[in-house]
Amino acid sequence: MSASTPLERGLKALTEKDSGLFIPKKLEVVKYGSLSLNAYPEVDHNSPAAERVFALMINKQAAESQYCDPASVIDFYASRVGLESHARVAVAQWTSRLKEKWADPANLTVLSYHSANGNAIADAIDPATGVLREITDGAAGTRRPAGVRLALVRCTISYDDLHYANDPTTLNAEYFIPLPVGTITFNNALGVATNRVTCTINGDPFALTKEQFKTQVLDPVGVSGPVKLKAADVGVTDCSFDEQTKAKEINNRIIGLGSESIFRKLREQLAPTFSSTPHSTVEKITMSFGEGGNKVDLTVLEYHRALMRGSQTFLEDPQWPFNLAAHFANNLTPAIKAKFQNKTKHHLTFTDLSRDAQLRAIDTYLGIAIEMEKEVNSVKVLVRDAMSDTHNFCAQLMTHLGVPLNPSINPSETDTSTFLSAAEETLRRYAKDDAGNKHKYEEVSKVVREILCWGCMGKHRWRDPHTKEIICPNKDKPGVMERAKGKHKEYVDSLKERRNGWIAKKKVKFSDLPANQKEKARAMILKEASTIVSANAINPNTEGSGVSYPTYSYSATNGNVPPLPVQIDNKLPHITITLGKLDLSIE
Image 1: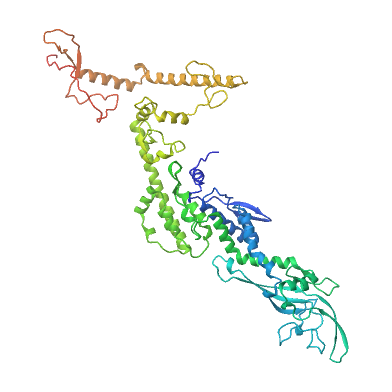
Image 2: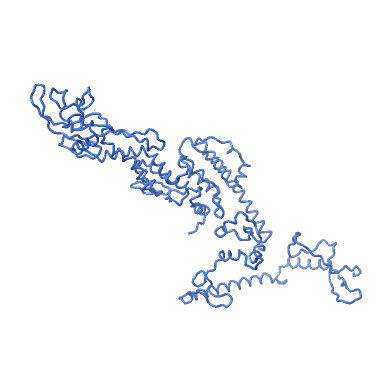
């Protein structure tokens, strides 16, 4: 389907990769899980760079406004611009570090030790060393207590190298790590052998290497990730472990920490050289855009609507990063802008970037621009009517070759266009060069005036115009010839009707005129007859040989000369021929 409105034609024209201009499209409601989001329509690599970046920002805002988790936000806006795989890679760069660091003692700090029911064990850490007490004989408070089952740790992971500005970016996550337990025997303060269930690792388990920690701690307890404690079931004293919930919580924190860096990385994938400022997309929106035959002028209202759509990324901010009001005024079409500047020059000195001031200024400028647009359009109508009244036709925009301005055929000619009359157009249409070749326009006109068969509607004639031979290749198909002959009859009948109408208009009998018109006609004829005098013919041969012609002359002193039936252009050459002389002897 071909684009019909200026806005649609403009959007079609601006899908070139090297074009930065675009007109924001209307948002659409999109289902994402159980949510309904106001999203920007999907774009691809053929869309203008500014539009691709704008779609990314709008869809990011749409997901964030519904309080989606960071992972869902990235997944949504990436899927709307075709960057799902790039988003997964970018997210994995951040989340993979948790898998590498969560069980590495070098990144862990022990906060406390706990029993199986989740209660903290106060004397599990030796204050002198700051680590878990050793398994030794002795009184309580000097040896490892019973019931050491869990360690609450803090994991510290640095993301400085992944941050878009290389700023210090550190994650601190707290979670539990189960410890291997068993029954150990020791002598108490009285020397009596005592059995206790507690952590069985000799020494500080977090002094092990990463590989030792895996084989001596993780593998025996069978965990593969950070643990969150779940409340014990009824009748059970020990807590249960939840690895998936805790890992998801930490990953969401990580993705939130890296969301801006991930967003910037995806934006670079969409448009590597495009500016990263929030208003960069709005700067690409103008009232007049496109090139050559694809050049389109929006109406003032369409232009205003496009700018307001483009400003959605910062519309609610109390202080705007961009002077949108001045941009609106400076990017009107030249004709409207000239009248706008004659009306007001306020935009030249307006610098207040507060949201309220900008919106007030834009509303004021919009009213003035609409008024100026009406004036420009009224002038166009006056010019068109004047041309129509003077020449009995409406001139069309032509190129310097005399070809109607049709961008789809001759886009390169638009810079040297001019107005040609109907007569000039006809002369150029049938003109030939010095070698007798047909003018370029004759070939172009074949494309413009496409011929369709009246029978099968194919791109050919239904019969030869000279020999009257049927040449339609589908003439033998049922209904084709009947349809063609019917169309031909309609065409002939319409010609007859038009011809009869012309003849009827030309033949006006005196007897058919109304009484007042008859009186005017009689008065005109009598008045002209009173001014006509007879004149003898001039004999060019002084000897009397030759032919004489009777002629009539109008009196030069009579100011009531009837008007000529045609308009005389005083710029055209004139020829004066003496046809006779006034004979004063005739009464």
